Amino acid sequence: MAEFADRAEVRVRAGHGGHGCASIHREKFKPLGGPNGGNGGHGGDVVIEVDPSTATLLDFHRRPVRRAGDGKPGAGSHRNGADGADLVIRVPDGTVVRNESGAQLADLTGAGTRYVAAEGGRGGLGNAALASVRRKAPGFALRGEPGQELALVLELKTVADAGLVGFPNAGKSSLIAAMSAARPKIASYPFTTLTPNLGVVEAGDVQFVVADVPGLIPGASSGKGLGLDFLRHVERCSVLVHVLDCATEEPGRDPVSDLDALEAELAAYSELTGAQLADRPRIVALNKVDVPAARDLARLVAPELEARGLAVRLVSAATTDGVRELAFTLASVIAAARAAAPPAEPTRLVLRPAPVAGPAFEVVSAGSNSFRIVGDKPRRWILQTDFSNDEAVGYLADRLARLGIEQALAEAGATKGAEVLIGEEDNCVVFDWDPDVPAGGAVLGPRGTDQRVVG
Image (tube, rainbow, N blue to C red):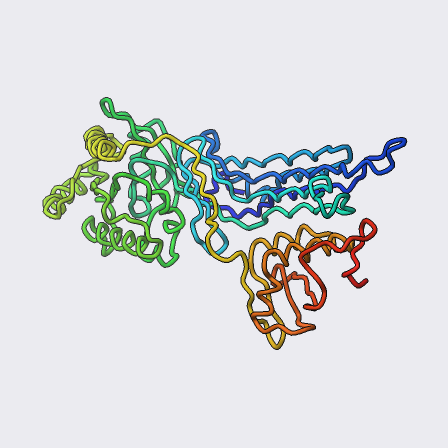
C-alpha cells in the first residue's frame, strides 16, 4: 500500500443515546415511593480535527469505519447514565470533508480546527422526568435516539505557498531539491513523482512552502496520466510556477507549446472542479539551461513569454544556476499575497440554533386514505417510543395530539381507518387512525397499560 494517501472514504457513526429507566422507589413501609428512573446518557459525537502531526489520510484506508461511544442507560435511584465518549478523528491540515454526493461539508485549515461530522443521539428520559400531575408514576421510559451514521469522503489539499506544475521529466523534483532540503525521488523516466512533494524554502526573511505534483500531460483533465488526481494540491497556492523543459527532444514540443498545454489543462481542471486557478500569479522557470542548446532556446522564447506578462527565470536544477533568483522572485510574490490577505480571525465557536418559525410537521398524502407525517419532532418521538409498552404508545399518541396532528389529519380529509405513516421512509411506523378514540390526555390504568391501545 502506498505511504501517501490524499483521498479516503470513511463511514462514521455517532454514539446511540442510552435508554431511560422505568423504576419505582421501594422502601419498607413505602411500597410506592414514586418514580426514580434516571435518564440515559447522550451518545458521543464524531469530531474531525486538524492535527499538524498527521501528514496523510493513509490511516483511513486501514480503518475505514469509525464509531463514537454509546450513552449508558439510566438506572434507579435517579442515576443518570454516562454520556458516550466523543470520537476525535485527526486529519492533516488542508483536509476537505465531502458527503457521498460530493457536496463540500467543511474545509479544515489551521491547527485545532474542528468539525462535528455526526451528532450523537439524545439519551432517553427516565420515568422520573416523565412524571406529571396526570401521570404521577409512569410505567415506561423513553428510548435513546440512534446516533447519526453517514459516509464521508476526505480529500487532502496540501497547504503550500507555491506550486510547481509541468510535463513529466521537466525537472520539478530536481528543482524542489535544489531550492530546499527536500529529497524527492529523482529519475530519468516519466512519472517518477507519484506523490506530491513539499519543500521549505527560505529567501531573505521570507520562508515559504513549495509543492510539486506528478507531471501533467495533455488530456490530464479527462483522466490521462496522474496529474488530475493531484492537482488539488495546488489549489491553495499563492503562485504557480510553470517548469518548462528547454532540453526536450520530443517531436512537436517546445517551451511555448508546453506552456499553452499546461494552461489548457489548468483551465479544464478549474472548469471541472470550480477551482479558481486563473487569478493566481504565474512564474515561468525555463529549466535545464546548463545544456547549451537549451540555454539558447530559453533566451529565444523568453521575450515572447515576457510579452504575455509573465515573469520568466532561466534556471538549472542540476547546477543550481538561477535557482536563488527564482526563490527570491517567489518570495516577493508570496510576501505580497500574504500582505494583501485579510488578517486571520481568532477561532471561535459559532452557535446556529435551528429556526423555530414554520410548521413542526407536514401531512403529505400517500395514496387513497393514506397519509405520511413529515417532521423532525414526530420522527424523533417514534424513535424514543418503546412499542412493547402500551402506556408508552399512549404517551406518544398524547404528544402527537398536542402537536396538532389529529386536527391536521382531519383537515387533510382523513377518515376512520386511515393509514398514517410516521418515521423514516424505509423504516416507518404505521397507525390506523380512529378519530373516535380520545387523544391528548392520559387514560390511566395499571402502570404499563393504556385502555386506548388494542393489543
